[in-house]
Length: 123
Image (cartoon, rainbow, N blue to C red; front, side, top):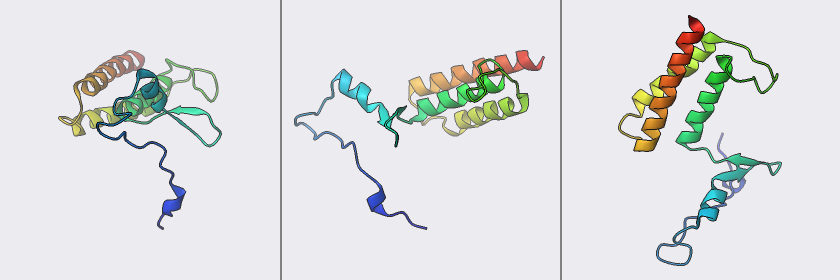
C-alpha cells in the first residue's frame, strides 16, 4: 500500500540561506519545537531527546515512581520496566558515535538513574 503524496502537508520549510529569515529568533525556534495535532492541541516535536524522555517517563510509571496517566494511580510492573530500560540500553549501544554530546550525556544519565531505581525496586 502506497501513500498518496497529497496526504502530506509541508508546514515548515528551511529558511533561505543568507536571506530574510536565515536566523530564527528564540521565540520562533520555541514555536517550531511544537506541532499541532488534528484537534489543535500542541504536541512536542519528536526528536531523539523527546523520544528518550518519553521512554524514561514510561519506565518511571512502570517502576511505580510516577502515577499512571490512564488510572491516576501508582502501580509497578518491573518486568516491563526492565524491558524499557533494556531498550534504552540498546539505543545507547546502537547510536554510539552518532549522538551529539548533549544527547549522549542525557541518555547515559537517564540509563544510570533508571538502573539504580530498578535495583532499589527489585531489592
